[in-house]
Length: 359
Image (cartoon, rainbow, N blue to C red; front, side):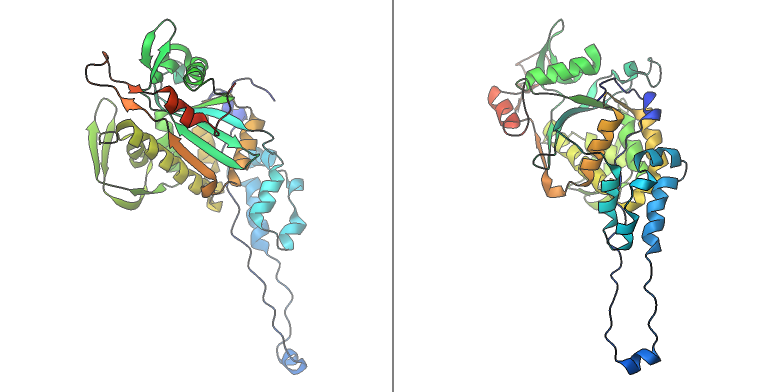
């Protein structure tokens, strides 16, 4: 597999979006026992062919504005049409037709970053802003699980040539490569196979593209920060959040939980997104999702790797996703010149052991 980086401009030829499951289980046919006399009164009707299933599957190939792309992902001759007619679950047929399996575990560093406005749009350098969020995710086809570890952005780390800094500065000083190195060193030499960088406006755009996400807001959340362009105004309760609201929910940190609560909320948003992306209707929004990938994402995953991970994700159930945050403590007011999240070796061991592989 190619390890050549895929920048935002290159994603146009290798768009990667999570694929949606197909419609729910087909209608069950009903059998009625009748006497000969009853049959003569009510002639039997020929068995109805579930054309709806066929039509929806075809829409995967000819979806608005994305036919060529979809036919690359799901070739018509790879679909088990006979199986669809005989009652196979459409989602099973779709996953099988993708033909791409995740053959080994992948550990991926996912970062939400501030876009560098001075850099050319779509260039790798335009994603070299501070990482507003960092998450290490392991996709494991062996035990069919996903592990997510949120890394507080204020985590204290040493970076050669820069001294003691916050971990979110690594992406600024050396881009994705340095960020991977620093995270690996901090987490006992954890292996990081690939990276994905999403600019901060990308999350909002993605949520809007899928029609919003359902989130149970635990409490009143209100905060305005003009420098970060945040205007958070949420009430408690289960509700569907639009892109701006979901971004505010994920970035809110002004409560007793601080960065740790913020990291947990980011995981809540990701899980809600996965649920929305798994809905059959998402296929109609595919052109918008592709457009977002082109504008807001930078990654060194190859197209085949993206598709394998997307296919694997379709098969994951909520109970197979484990999420946690890197434990530690906030620094004391006069302990350092700046405030940090202090992580002990024991905290790292607890976060990594039996969840992630190290070098």
